[in-house]
Length: 279
Image (tube, rainbow, N blue to C red; front, side, top):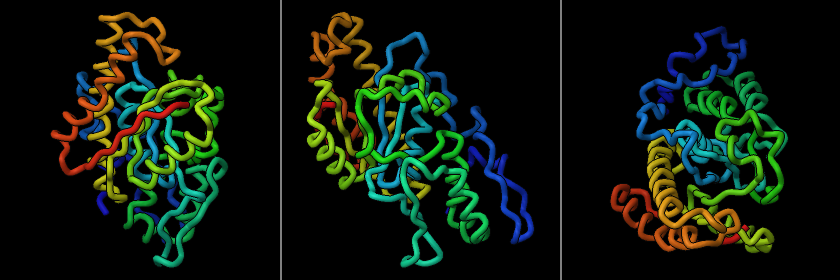
């Protein structure tokens, strides 16, 4: 698999097979594939929607999207919907399995590097985990998330600013089974906050190359949604917005399907689904 170019300059040098390479440092902010275009960065003095990205294991697709949104200065959290974190192992019948919410990206990186540095470098896992540990501490399970619970222990995560209250406006899943799992879980949680949330699925194959493309597409969608929300608030005022009410919120909610349709025309190879739900 290809290597994320944002980490190319910080990859560890080749070592003896028995040595465990250290995780790479954070990707350089101004590198080729980072969000460096000022038009792709939302100024801190402007309104920002709050986003959540979701895949099965909170490792590849959701984390690439998390990084892209965070680099654009959009408030972002991320999750996985699986029962356990599953990563490729030495064979298809021997996956590496870890617990959500407790096993850190750094610990997974160290374990896989000690098992087989050559294999997990070649298939991109060590590079992926090195990226992840610069974004946040550990993979989180969506079904264990409590909407409205303060995320005070995530203040060092990339994209954490604005997510402290544990509430989001838009959830973007990366495959249909995750989309279904999210909607089922939100229904089971009962929408106690009565806070509307747009749930969008962007179907992305689970490999490093397509996760990178999918992350860019998700960023494009997020910026479109954020621009539309900001305009509605500017014209109609922000009264009731935080309660999921008011003229601006209603206007934005009504525009979301058309915004997604326009986005789909720009990204025809990434099929999308949409639903409105409540936290």
